[in-house]
Image (tube, rainbow, N blue to C red):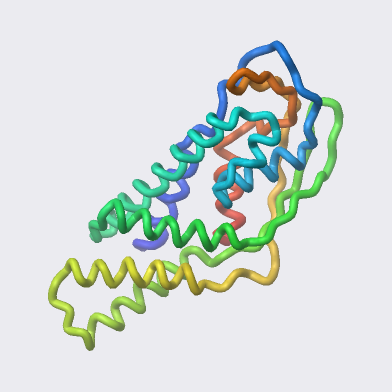
Length: 222
């Protein structure tokens, strides 16, 4: 269905961004940060679009912000492409408005991060978060639009599109957040990471794509 396709594409858009950093380098190391801090930083960056926890880890602030910008623009173009593939061409600015509504809702979710196990080289961390029913929200917006179009006698396609975009935004704005939390675990390895002028020695994910994918799955109830 259209909505499943939209979600698949949004997810692959998220995965497509190779997250942060050339993993090379030696030199000056900072003390080990906690593995839980690393996963909080990734959650804040990807789900709340906040780079401050990444910067606190010692990741170069400019690099974090550039990563976030790349992520945001690729999400916007993914949303635009998804609509186009479903037969509804929307403008970049409409896609930006939709992305903003999704982001605001995701930023309101509560989450917690806990350590499962840790040795000198590896750690397992559990991330638990509230979630929204992402696909249902799109379905609801589509249905609302169809219901409205009948009595409104909207002839112009552009008006119908506007209506759909505005309903998607409304549905995200008013979507309810789960009362329970979903969880996934992540494996982190102690590694040296070069970022800007810093080389930091921290627990960091082995697989960035998995981090983006799993965090998305948690918060969108997939």
